[in-house]
Image (tube, rainbow, N blue to C red; front, side, top):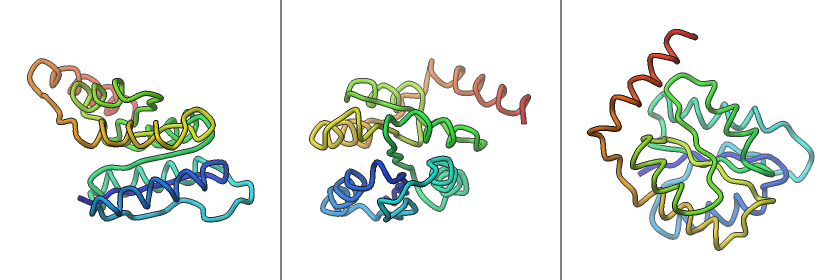
Length: 148
């Protein structure tokens, strides 16, 4: 598995910890986030991760900014991306099971590192259930096509 990870300056420390956590699990990580504590713009990194996922250069992505909101909004502008911001593990698991999310986002100012690890684990260990959920995913894709 290969995960793309991106962050802004606010989330630098958390990104480094999550990246290390993933690598310790044997997961390949492509880091396209900032490595600088200098102020930067999160949309740049949301788009970079989203493009890697959309073009199948990464299996999925993780985005981190102050709240997770802005960076996930940026990622969701890329066709084929279903980024979900999660501040607890239950939503992370269901976002994958029901919505087949391909990018997980959270906020470095919202969750601590241990909770972030739990959120990541629930999301990575969940599997898309398909079935009754596929019709809704197809509907989302149709909305995306109509508005491209």
